[in-house]
Amino acid sequence: MKAFDFKKYRKQIIAAVIIVAVCIILGVLKPGREALLSRTSPEMQKLIDADAGSSRKRVTVTYNSLLVISYASLSSSGANVMSERYVGFLGKVYRADEGAARIVGQMVNYTYRMLGCGENLMHGAKLTVLLTTLTVFFGVLLGTVLALGKISKRKLLAKISSAYIFFFRGTPLLIQMFVVYFTVPGIFGFAWRDLFPASDAEAVYKGAFTAALIAFALNSGAYCAEIVRSAIQSIDKGQFEAAKALGMSYGQTMTRIIIPQSIRRMIPNVSNEFIMILKDASLVFAISLMDITTISKNIMTSEGSYLVFIPALVIYLVITAFFGFLFDRIEKRFSVYE
Image: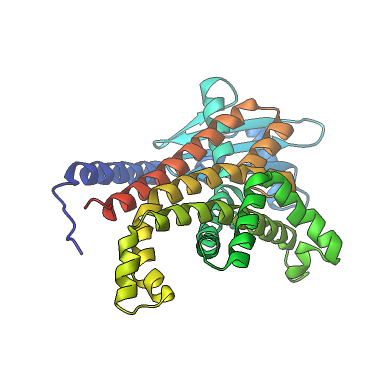
């Protein structure tokens, strides 16, 4: 294994350290919840104080803390309805009821919710990344089996594998997800939520996630099969003949010689498949899974703000850029030409 070349990446490392240091400093200086609430109007403060000793809350407080900036939104109920918004940044608190400050506050609130901050893995960006990662993992495993089946000399196995690939590549992913989520339980008489304890508050979401993962993995497996097949068949046939001359079986040849070399050739295409699945994950809004797209749509419906789609695009772009960079480094590390 090559030693890490610090000099080669010195500029990037220094830039990363500076960014992290700045974020830490801004995070420390960021006003917290109490600091934001202390800036509320006297009328709102009276209601907050009254709520402290009462079981009936008249003020709804929403507080979001996002890395270097914080946001608080307060709304009261009753005869005199009031609403106030505040943004905290660099040790100062700003009123955010109108203008640029309000837009900044909304962006913080929308981004916080879409990232799934304060929620479990069944919410926001965490669900999107988890679904994509698991889909590609199982897709590559299934695709490897299908690829070996398709190039097998056993005609029945080759035809079954080819038929599977043709079916899942020839039908829409959304319809496949509907079949897995609605049709399969209807035929066999079960519900996906029943796979989890009835006491589990997230049973419905976990069941929907399981169905989505199965549909996505089955679909990805068909595409990964072609990726694996083309990588295997790109290996020079002379290596098969050399392995056979050494007395190696077909299984030994594939696992010890062909597949290890094929992995290097698969990385760019698997990277593309990962990015495609990452974007296709937005289809889970159709079964009410709380991914980035679903949360964006819910916010737009409830608050009537089309600004919500701006942070949604940025979040998708950041996630895509991160995994694109990661796969690029892996590809260079295992480059065929190095």
